[in-house]
Image (cartoon, rainbow, N blue to C red; front, side, top):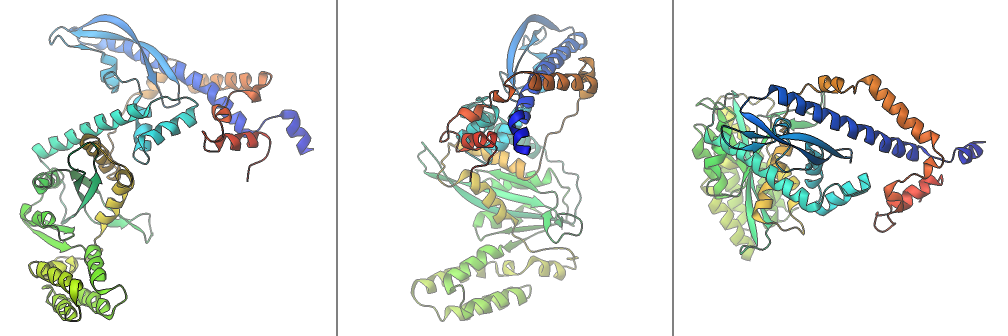
Length: 469
């Protein structure tokens, strides 16, 4: 009986969902057009008299639901400055000359931070059934928004007035080499810092922890890194002589310099990098490694125990490995106390250490950056800086939040729950009341197996009642 009913109805949930979605997109497009034109009318009545209407101009806006909305808004001239402006665009945050809505831009940014620009374009095209934006539009959006985020940081750095008070600020710094294209230099180093206040359970009772209030700062200017990074920290925190700043990183000299920019700072050699270097010299499973790691964990605040064990272990080496060990010894001798776990050093200062954990956040964040910007990819400096800035904001979970009287606007254009229900009913009637409804266009169905990555084959098989294996 089920097979007979299925044959009689001749459809699937996939088709129903897609068809109703397409019909409701039309309703969405009309509602958005009416809201925008209503807001433009409101602006006309609320504007200052200095803004004179020049003309009504129609524009096209690609939106999150894949509907291109055409609407008219007024073009004004400011009689004081002589500047011409679309006040609606300014008020709603529509970029100058942009034909992409902010919500669709957010989606573009998300896709662009996890895949190439071309792959992001293809993903949008497969989802909507047409190409709402090109990969070049996505790239230009990344560059523009990345630059604006960088400007926000620069403004904070120029006039740091941090008010947040904490006992300890953690800063973990690391560098990332990235390939360049069409430049004299074949690669460049991005300088990055993870700034946070400690750790907290990811969920109540969880044994998995996350950073508290993480912020990421990056720049391609290594020589000026701490000059700017420290001011960025001061733009967030009110740091005085009682504030401990713990800096963690590999033995790069530019990272060590950070302690000079805060009144009370300690530097720790990153354990991940140090242990990696030791394994490279002595071998992963050697007896020397076990003794060296034990010395690291049991050392006092001077680092003498570990360095003494390292010197003894060196006597068993020959050739290049002995040279590498000697170089490591020489370097660590100048910062011996930095090999000691920072918590022991805080205890020696009579500082509480309850709830403090081992450091190592920088390495994980570098891996997230690397996943997007390294591999077979190469960059122009401007595009790289923009992408790194956007990734920094994304991983810091920083957002620019705005509030609007959305419900009020929707009610004015009669897009109330009742109106939505009527629109939905109309869409459903159109779907179920037209012959051959279920043969309506589902764009990816006819795009070809190779072009669609197998999705067309999947959907066509789904329409036949079976899923390809």
